[in-house]
Length: 120
Image 1 (tube, rainbow, N blue to C red):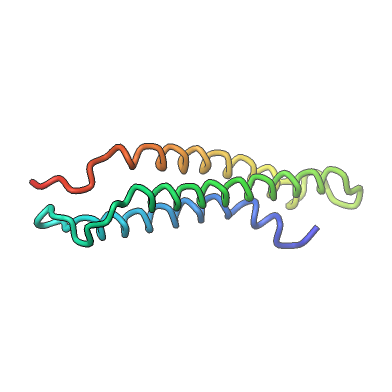
Image 2 (image 1 turned 180 degrees about the vertical axis):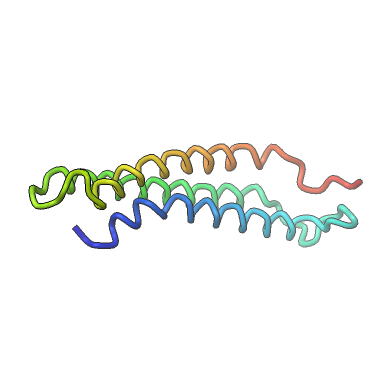
């Protein structure tokens, strides 16, 4: 098992959510001027939000897979302590990745239903 695999399992989903959050805000700002409520770039942001949401979902699924591989590797290897750091990171990666996957999916589904430019 590669030494970075447990870390991928723990941080892939939270980092993908951060990228989704920041890029979604940037796309929202590019789509609408906050002071006037008028479109800035005359840009339909729905496909961009969907694409970033899909990429974030894939990254979270990669994190879940890495955490599962880490946990299975820790359980199968007789030299690794089953209560040690590697097994803990596998468990933590699964829990954290599933929670952030749910947040990513909910964000991706909810955002397109909101109005981009609403003056006032």
